[in-house]
Image (cartoon, rainbow, N blue to C red; front, side, top):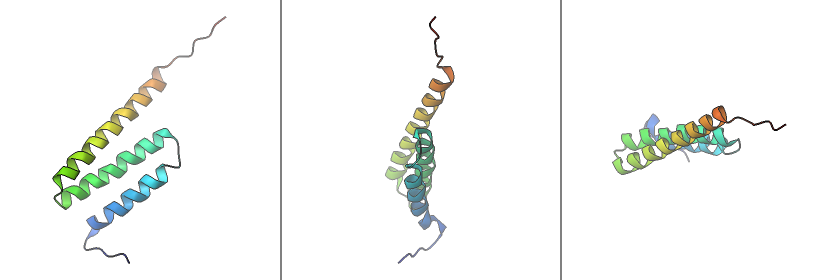
Length: 84
């Protein structure tokens, strides 16, 4: 049975669906999906006044953003050297 009192109660469900679906794709999609997923958790934690959970989820979001930027920079600046 699914019951909720307001829209914020559905955020964990959407977060889990996004996280689960993104795991079936490549590394960047997984990172982006987890950023979106944990951002929804941060909003939910704020709404239910779970400050410890909000801080933890925010740190996970920052970590995933850092990894995503690292992967993008690595792919942009990597040059294949041709040997003759």
